[in-house]
Each structure stands twice: as structure tokens, then as C-alpha cells.
Image 1 (tube, rainbow, N blue to C red):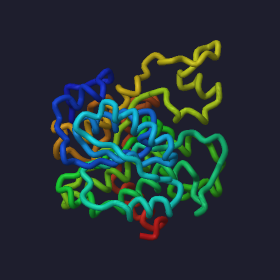
Image 2 (image 1 turned 135 degrees about the vertical axis):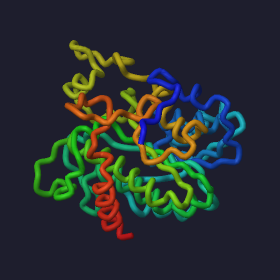
Image 3 (image 1 turned 180 degrees about the vertical axis):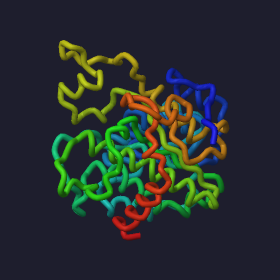
Length: 319
């Protein structure tokens, strides 16, 4: 399978990617749509005419974001729905409240590098629970709505941090190994890619495509758990400890949302599925030492591990 490329790059913005696209009559859900790249993804989809639901934990923040989007919404509409990805009851309520087809699902929300080991009520490590299991429960619950759309797209926001760790199937939830924030985050993002690979194959007959992506480095609320040393490590502060507005090589939120919008709406990727993108193009599979910033490691695309994760996910979610 040849690598899929487009005319877009790291400098492309969501507005550029969606220019000329008409999403009138399409319905979309963007998790974490109240800030950062989720907000810019929702803004682009709404501007192209879609009816967009911001699925957010903080509905007050969601309403503020919706009001901001509405100022330049164009033909589209935006609304807010409550969704806490760490709370199965909240996920089930969101799914139960959804009626009709769903054309675009953008699994964008997440937490990163939580400094201490925390667990959900089920005993799951929080980053794995939110970044993977919560989105998996949401996606599985919305299957019929996605199938009814006849050509739905699932977009999964992962990260180059998947290079920090494969899914450690023997101890996913850090019950016997020492907790390490970046390993936990990396594992959750590898899981997001593997689950996308499984979805692409298992739901192809329903006309559903699924792709994952790395949005790039963007200064958003996602970095709220990082201390000064970690911010320096990722290049977000200078040697004097000053936080940079736009670190070298990082993107604006509008640029960071571009690949999500490409996969969600562009006709250029019609029928493309089961792949991992960055900077508007399918990522290169890493054959040597990873640099921690670009490319995708083979273990994140391994079909055997994707099936194993699928089975483990269903077991944990009791589906």
C-alpha cells in the first residue's frame, strides 16, 4: 500500500483545507470542542455548513465556544452536549440522546502526562481510560448512527508521543510496573492508533472510514499538567524559563486543526482508511531510531495488536 500524500503541509490551516467544501446537511461531533484544536476543527466544519455538536465535560465552556463559533458560522449550526470521557454513565447518556445519522466523529479530547497515577472508578489508569477507552465507548455506541450516514468518517487525534510506548498488554493500568507519565500517555496514544486500524477493517462494510493523526505541537490546555522541566523538554519554554507563545517548529491552533479537518471533510481523502497522518499527509513508517516528533512506529499499525486491543477493549467495556 503506497503512502498517501496531499498538497497540504505543516503550514496549512483548517480554513485552507476546507475551502470550497460544502457540508450542508452533514452532522458532526467533536469531543473537546471548547478549546484548542477541537475548537478550530469545530469552527471549520460549522463554517462549511455542518451541524456540529461540541461534546464537552464543561458545558459552560462549551457554550462560550459555541457563541464564539456562531459569530462566523456561515451556513452551519453549533450546539453543545455534555460528555465526560472518564464517566461511562455520561458517555452512555450522550449516546442515548443521539438520534439520526452521524456523518463525522472527531475524537479529539484528551489528557496528557498526568504527573501522578490516578484511576477511574473502574480502576483504569486515567490517560488510557480517557484517551482510548472513553472514545472507544463513544464510538462503539454511535456505530448505528455512523452506519446510517452511508459514508461516515471517524477521525482520531493521536500523537507522535505514541513513540514513547507500545500498549503493554500485560500491565496496561500500571498495577505492577512503576507509573511514568509519558509512558502512560504514549501507551494511550498508541492504543488510539491501533483501535483506528481495527475500526477501519471491521466497519468497512458499513461504509465507515477511520483514520488517526498527529496534529503537531500546539500550545493548548493539554500542557496544563507539565512542569517547567517538561515544558523545556518539549520546547515550550526557553532556557530562562520563559514560556514561548509559539515555540520553534510548533503550530498555531488553526494549523494544528488542519489534518483533523482534512480527514473529516476533504474530498481528497474519500475512501482512505486505516492510516495515520501528520502535516496533511500520511506519516512515514519509521524504520530506524525514532526522533519522538515525526513518523509512525510499526507497532502502532500492527494488525495483530489492533485485534488484540479490540478484544481487550470490548472486554473492559463489557460489550
